[in-house]
Length: 138
Image 1: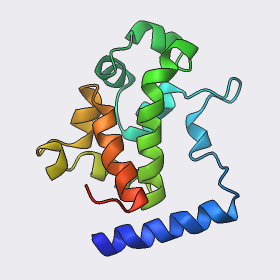
Image 2 (image 1 turned 90 degrees about the vertical axis):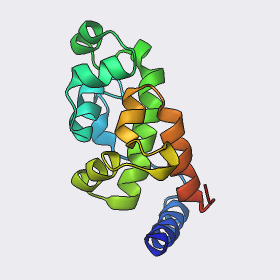
Image 3 (image 1 turned 120 degrees about the vertical axis):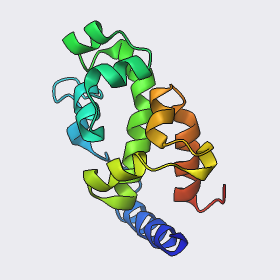
């Protein structure tokens, strides 16, 4: 696992240098008109019903269902999308991202990343992922 992480870190660094450090990862998770994160597209990518994601992030489901890229919903969606971006960079396939999200993690006290995200503790997951991407041991 550590060798895979190291290989992915090297690949990520190469990609960042080649792209000048500016890129949009998973642009398909954004609303084309506004450019904002689309909660429905994010939920679909994660293999979740929108209602479950909305409730986990303490968002009003009816409001987000009507306008899944509403400006008011962006702050809680941003760290979730960032976590998914990092996972996408590591694994490249949505199926593998979903497997990782649903696998218990020792640094989350045996909880899955998805459980933590749906308990509105996305930053705990994000910290683990950002440290792994940067090569920092947890």
